[in-house]
Amino acid sequence: MDFLRGKQIGAGTLVRVSVADGVYTLPPGIVLDLSHPQGDQIQLIGNQIDPAKCVLMASFPPTNNAVACSNGHRFGLLDGFRVDLPQKADKPNNVSGIIAVNGSYINLGSKIQVNNFYYGINASYGSTINADFAQVSNAGDVGIWAFCGSQINARHARSSNCMDRDNQWGYGFQAEYASQIDCEGAYASGNLNGGFAALSGSVTRALNTISENNLGSGYFSLFRGVVEAWGGQARNNGRFGWECADGSGMIYGVDSQQDTLGTCNHYATLDTAGDQGRLLATRGPLRVDTATHESIYFNTGGGLQAEIRNQDQAENHVLLQGSQTGKPALVSVDGKDQNIDLALRPKGSGSVQLGASYHEGAPMEARFIEVKGSDDAKHQVWVASGFMEIKDADGVMRKVLLA
Image (cartoon, rainbow, N blue to C red; front, side, top):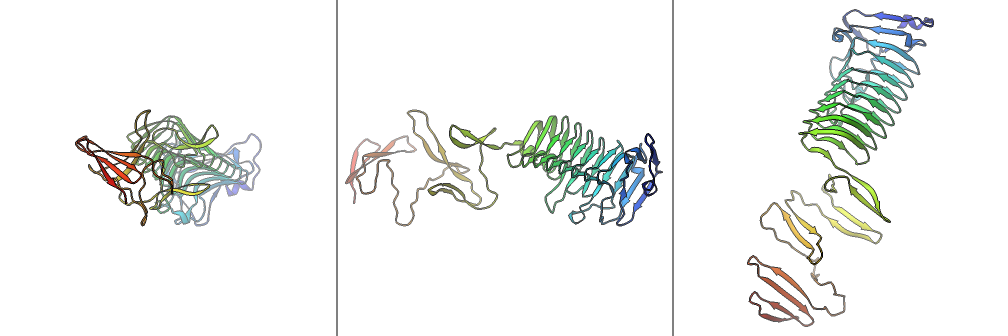
């Protein structure tokens, strides 16, 4: 490539560089630079039957990308190589095995392998890579990554065991920041967060893919990312078959089977009903969760109106349920215990008041409290000015003077 960089390649001429089997070590600080004014007329070919026999080995720890095309250049074909590191790189060494950057283009053949780089195959800042049938393993953050307005074709590619446990990253295929990946027919497994992912307004086309045995979810979206996976199969993943992590993205077409937390994490969308804003669950129950041990607050323009306070290791909970016409609404308790008390407690010397017509300084209208005991007898307590009437199980009304 250094020799060719000093040459003008005539129109219609193809330059093919054939590389014999072996392990070729890239010295520290040295990148295999594919940039050339006529780079789309150059082919760099290793072993197109068994790329593991023709290895480009970078030095560890890596300080730069191993193979790169930059600044608007194009490269015709790179095929038959395994781009490797002797051990897995971590975040301080977050370089790529193969990268096209700043409006560049790389055409990869079907016999390309990348191993142990923090990013396996990376198209960044308006770049494009054809990476059909590529194989990436043991990346840190992402195996095959389209970043910042870039495009990758990775049909029938494979990306496995991508994980950075310290930072909780790790995706097989990921499009991020208005980028696109077409990985139809691809395969992802063993990745920490997700097999196929779309983030930050990006699109991942993952038709007829398989995402299985990932520690996270099979298909993953975040920050308005969209994954189209018609015919996609999620199997035996550690979280969900598909996961819209914040509810802003969309995932379509996944058939989820036997994933640990279920088919998908259903999410809620902001919606309107008449002139009212509301949260609408797309499927299943609507949950409001906080990962901390803090309260959940409900506020209006008048201030705090209600609080759900944390209780560690809670096994029982309050249950509120509406009613049909002519039937009472329900305030009850539910949970693990067979018998659960319901406590209504005032603060300080305050009182517990029951009766809708009570106003401070005004007499309380007659209302009754009905309690059904274990013997199905109904016990009614009538409250009126000056006295309280108690009707026992035998139907005898007993008056109790109020202080």
